[in-house]
Length: 355
Image 1 (cartoon, rainbow, N blue to C red):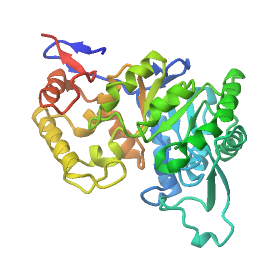
Image 2 (image 1 turned 180 degrees about the horizontal axis):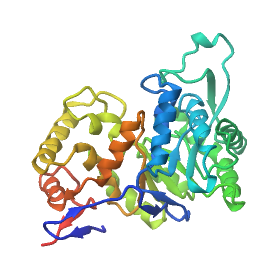
Image 3 (image 1 turned 60 degrees about the vertical axis):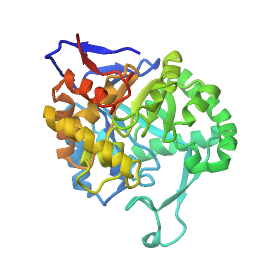
Image 4 (image 1 turned 90 degrees about the horizontal axis):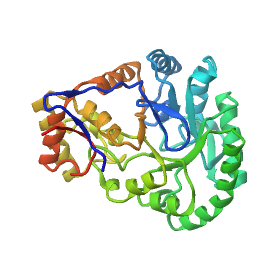
């Protein structure tokens, strides 16, 4: 496993605007991107003024990678993100969205529409369709909502046991024609690459066995709290030149809020073991004067396959804080202490002091 080494008393400095290649796509992503799920009002309603303020702050700060999905607020995130991006020079930014859900208008009174788990969002209902026809419909609808005729990266969304249960194999079979369509789109230059959005780590080897993907957008498995993909999954990705985007570097909240506040891990209340681990990490953070958020954002970026982290953002202050957290210098000894305390996988790539 590749390790990054620095002098014993050195501090590691990252630039959130530095760029890395995403697998074999030829696309270069900044270390810090913008996760568009909160624009769809997942946890709370967001005013249009707040959305515009947040997105403009991100763009003015130099962020040039934006991720969204039809699922985020049932189209609301794409509408809101597209309004801002249409005003920018198209060649300046990278845009990714998802495919696999096809939407239609809710047939009824929009005031009684249940869009859960979204607190807000739009009155549209979806069905899953991973066929070539379904992916094409999903893609075209996304371009219309965005008001943009090009989406750089497409992500196969939520094809896992959590959403499909025993029908996963059926959906994978359905995806075979969808993959053919995605390959045609890439060959024609209409997209620059495609991958799969992963909530369930067990689906990564399944996808790799069946399909030739360019990248994974990983929602949970590789964070400061979980490095299990290091054992075999990430080495398999390296062998296939599959890039990684980290979609939830704060593990859905707990690595941002910490153990003292009501927070979530994997979009659910954390169990005792997770809380205990967070408290132990917080203790070492305090010793080295390292914010938990800084360690959480920077840790995945030490892995050579990881091109970008894309935390979800609600407010302009969060944009500025994320930038500050990636820039925050972290002593190499901090990472060594985490490993010596068995809070990090022994083979996790980090900056280590040179003996």
